[in-house]
Amino acid sequence: MPNAVTRSSPIQHLLESRGAKFRDVGGSSYAVHTDSEEDDLRTLERLGLCDLSGLHKLGVKGPDSETWLTSKGLDVPSDVFASCSLPNGGTIVRLGAGEFFLEDDINNTTLLALADRLDTHKGKLVRVEHQEATFLLTGRRSLEALAQTCGINFREVTSRKVVFTRVAGVSCGIHPETFREVPAYRLWVDPSYAVYVWETVAEICQSLDGGEIGAGCIYFELL
Image 1 (cartoon, rainbow, N blue to C red):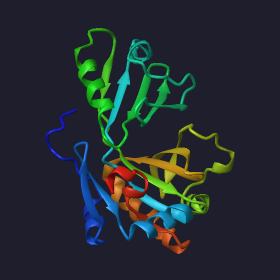
Image 2 (cartoon, rainbow, N blue to C red):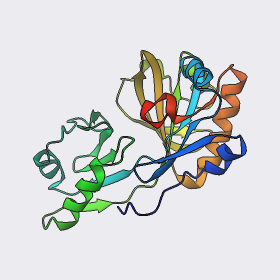
Image 3 (cartoon, rainbow, N blue to C red):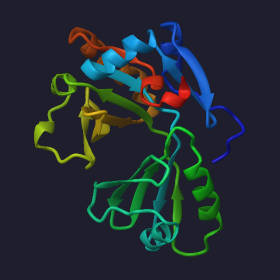
């Protein structure tokens, strides 16, 4: 997972056209805010859509995967599609008996070190590349937005357990979370569909008095 080139989001051009301010952190570029910091924070609580595609991803697969991840000091979820937090932030999700998906925190340091160790491991372990776009839907009206584009009733879904479904007709993983005491939903989508999904969900948010927000109101270190 090289860190020499700054990674950009598949929707960065959309945010640039809206006048978003960007900052590079951990080898990735993030839109810090799309409006004023205060307006972004208010939108986050009501209904916000944030691009976090710069967060690094890593897949680990094979009979040795759980033992190897545990040996590196990580909490590993026991149930399929359940998640745990990484030590420095970020998320690990169990996709199967011997398969895991990991997404880093804003500084993108945990997975860089982990990938280096993974590449030298000689056991039954395979590295799987992941390039999904990551969007975070936040706020009190987030369930209303999801209801317009997804057939799952998320009031009946356990928090921090991934649901694989469709959003606007596109395959998507959705991870229910709580952020600053408001509901939030992390969306993972193939980058080739990122623009379409973003524009569709953003339009729904606008119709519900929400809007696009920058990553600075999620990660204050970007400000």
